[in-house]
Length: 227
Picture 1: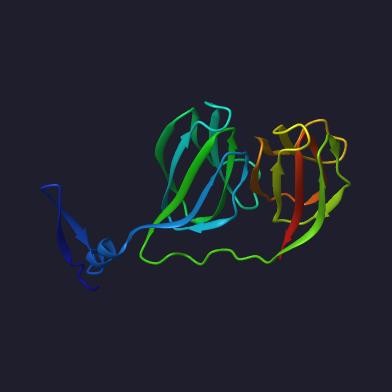
Picture 2: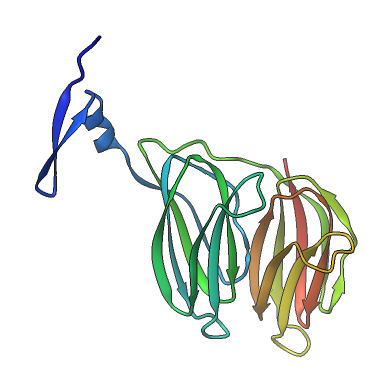
């Protein structure tokens, strides 16, 4: 059996023995690298991203157009609807870093009515290959009032790209919820904004859906399928 090599590392004045000749090189080459960033002032889910075994989420929040509001975040694996972890639950200004464990492909779920910025970072020598999709518009609509869209069928992943702008009465409210069939409960909330804004919300559940729109200002919506 080949003998293990013990290497002494000094950490804050303390000597630590690391077994294995490759350990010093790995310790030096592994560093925090940004995988993806996300910012906005509305609810929705992020694009999918792939991370190594050690990763973290650094976030900040600040009052938006309606002042102090809520910011909440959660983490879910692609292919799963339920969160694996939560980060951030504040009203108004806040910031923190949440450390996560377990390699894989994930997405973030954001519930917010104020401004936020999120960075996903993984500690690896080389960034993992990231998911790549070609997005094709399968349904689009526009308007300036309340109503439900026609139903559409999509497979996972898909996303909704939207814009809002003041209408004939000036700045108003614009909300989107994703609904399935005759269920009285929305499966997701994608926007809740006032005035000029835009956003993209990613979805990971396949099926036939429609959008419920609550608006008294102008909007455009595109439903896009990932391939």
